[in-house]
Amino acid sequence: MAALRVSNLNRAACRTKCRKKLSEHIREIKLSNVEYQRLTKSQEAKLGITVEPAEVRLITNAEDPYIWQALPEKSHLFKKQLSKHTISAYRELCREVGMSFEAALAPESSSSTGRVPNKGRQSTLSMHSLREPETSFTAVIERLNSDMHTMAAGINKSKEEVIKAIELKEMAEEETNRLRLVIQAAEIDKRRLQQDVQNLTGVVELLRITTVKSVDEFLSRLKLDLNGTTDV
Image (tube, rainbow, N blue to C red; front, side, top):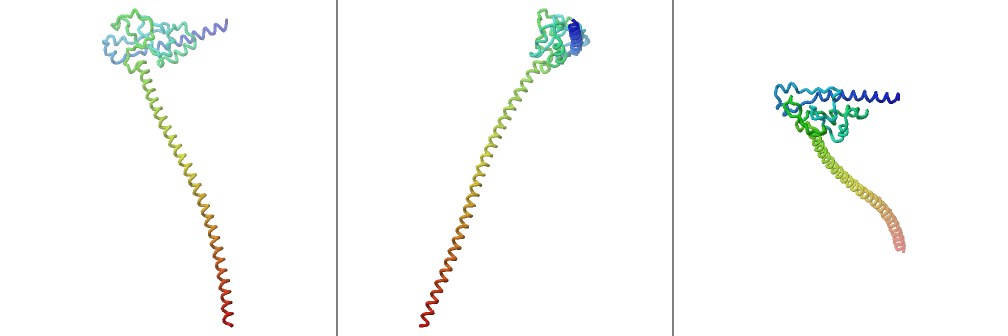
């Protein structure tokens, strides 16, 4: 029981903190320039929306001057009232307010702004906004999608360039390997030719020596023959 009481106290504290955070956020609602220009001077003075923390609702009704706009992945937070949420949900609401969801002026508010209450409104999760398109969540999503497409195109182009670079590198490596083989073959031929030249040089030298010796022997015999003839 003691643990249950502590858990309830923690949940109540988180809920109170969350209500205060959302109340402060609602107070910061601003109109777009287009919508602002439609207001009279007397209405400008009544622009501020003050909702006490205890009166903050996630599921608003037709009399509430504000609605919630949320990205699809955060819509589950607005399917029940604050009093029904868990501690983790309170923390998520505090963390994501103004980022993945925000408060906006209701399309139809009280008579103080010259509008007729919308009796048929049932949900606060409409993506309709009184802000200019470039500041609405829908515009943000569209811009993000556009950025994603642009980024994807850039990535695809980079992939193609990388593939081409890899192919060129592979071709260069293949050509380098081919030239290396050609050089190795030329080196082998060079060494073979050098050996052939060396062998031929040896043969020529041997022939020279043999020829000179043969000539010397022939001349010696010829000399002896000539001397013998002279003596007779």
